[in-house]
Length: 99
Image (cartoon, rainbow, N blue to C red; front, side, top):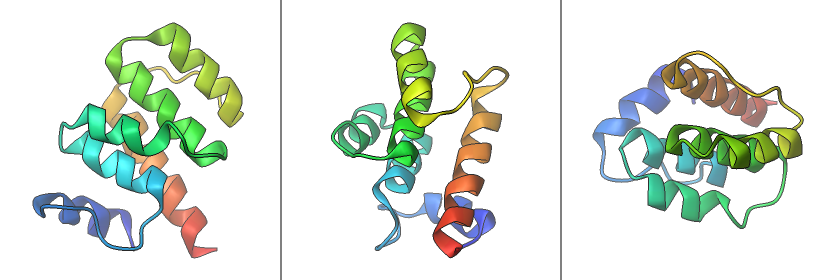
């Protein structure tokens, strides 16, 4: 799946079947359902889920919690527009699924 395909899927009612939980969480976040997105990643293991978890707490405004999750993900604390971060995370996760 490409980033363009992923963005196009946002017109649907649910994320594409078979995508990873972190990508599903980003899908729900883009649809404006922070709670559903957070429910998906809060119990997931791994750096991808931690990165998405960090992003979600950043958009929530809980920067202390976001910092914790960025550290767990091994990623620098993001700055700049959250929309750009969403694009960056989606692209990285999709690329990782293709390898």
